[in-house]
Image (cartoon, rainbow, N blue to C red; front, side, top):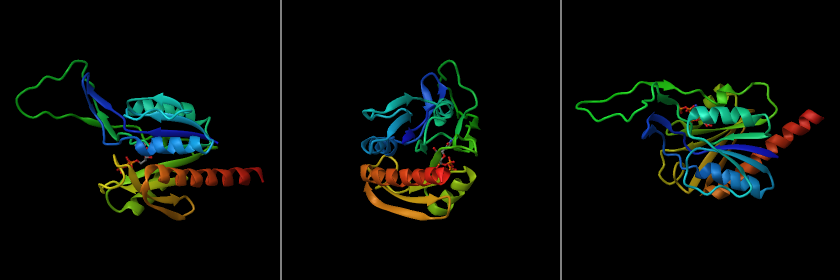
Length: 217
Ligand code: CTP
């Protein structure tokens, strides 16, 4: 199967030396890419700036801003069987990017932020590939994740509680709840991201296979 995986944060520039970003390390997305390759799948990895070696055998497309990630996903999605949107895409970006370095002045400084485009929500409703969204939550994990599944028209949402220090963002371990479009819910208990990734890959490939056999029958 052909996996298209996004990973890591995006960076939204303020001026030539500063940007807005988030704590995403890219570890979960890279672990999913490694696990997909290990299982014999083809992988295209669209990656924000991270400090991890590129997985051997994956085609890596490096991006920095949410707009670059938007374009890369739209270009690549038509050639995949499963899109896994693991990246922590910025929700807002500065309304203006200063061409020169913003100089220090007395007093407060404030910026206007404008919404970025939501990549998942922008995908065509009628599509051939499976779409997996991620939900990073600090409260009401399942309720919020279910809302994202519906609003962003995903087939699957993988939710994790990012308020915990021992799993989720930056950590080497994760614990996730998987919500399916049909209402089913599965949990993977706390384990190294590598192990969680292997389980996730099996689940995604299974859903994809079922979809394909249904279409052929
Ligand atoms: N996502 C996206 N485009 C964006 C922002 C997020 O495609 N501009 C995707 C992420 O890659 C993830 C999912 O949407 O798969 C949910 O991201 P998350 O940050 O949990 O949720 P948000 O939609 O940003 O909502 P909130 O921050 O309010 O929880």
